[in-house]
Amino acid sequence: MTVAVVTLIGGLIGLVLSGAGIVNGASLIGLRLGLPPLVVGLTIVAAGTSAPELAVTWRAADAGDPGLALGNVVGSNIANILLVLGLVALVGAIPIGRRARRIELPVMIAASFVAAGLALDGSISRIDGLILVTGLVVYLTWMIVDARRRHVEVALEGGVGAERPTGRRTLIAIGTFVVGAVGVAVSANFVVSGAEEIALELGVPDLVVGLTVLAIGTSAPEIVTSVIAAVRGEREVAIGNAIGSNVFNLLFVLGLVSATTTDLPIADELIRLDLPVMLAASLLCVPFAITRASITRWEGAAFLGLYVSYTTYVVLDGLENRVATPFGIAALVVLAPAIVIATVLETRRHHYGSTTEGRPATTDNSTVLE
Image (tube, rainbow, N blue to C red):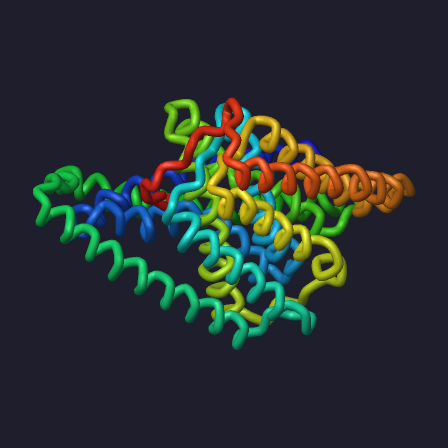
């Protein structure tokens, strides 16, 4: 058991460090190729931060562990909203920019519902994977065209673009990218083997490990990036990180793995509980986008409370503890009405034009996905 824990933790640390190498290296390579910074952020960086999820999901699917594979994707999406945004909101209110309201948030919700709909027949097939990948290609094509248009407009207005890296920095970036890619692949093997051993020792399903331990571990890049940005006062980055990662997890990670490896069977528990929780977490951002209100500290605490309650129930249910059912009912009866009431009050407060401390007006700055 100790060896399995050390293997898992070491693998997760390797994923975080290797993922950072991929993002940094790929970003500099993109700039060297002359891509606008916005395009680099919306595509290369967004895909790079999903590299840990891709490596773990691919390795788990290849090893015949669909519970780990799907649990990692769904659990990461839940963690990106409830855990990441909850932690960042505790640092300070999170404004939701115009781009996130009009583009990224609707795309994330649409991708979530499409993925959940494809899973209702009991599996994510190769055809389903091709559908998700096609959605990603369409989304990326539109983003790149739009971002390049914005880049040209800025240049015509006399704006200054990012400086291209030198030849030496480019070589270092290529080396960093290659080392990061190899590191992610190797680390994923340690993570999956460690997680499998822990699940076997504790007697819990692989799905539970994927939804909790792996989900938090592979979401570490988003957590670290968002919290650091929040401490620096760049809290708008958090919403872009969370939304962008969720879109790539569904369309890029889940789509690519299922399209290129094998059909992924969906556990009944995933359809009954975890996919609805993922959809609900995505929809939690809608009231704030509609009212243009920020996510405050109190609401961030509520997000964290929901995440702790969800993970606690998942673990208790996986261990077949008799406390699981009453705990789930209590959490649903107490937390769900509280969130609904808070949302209604928030909408009324905005409708009547009142202002509250800690809820600053949202700017119209575009949110860059990372």
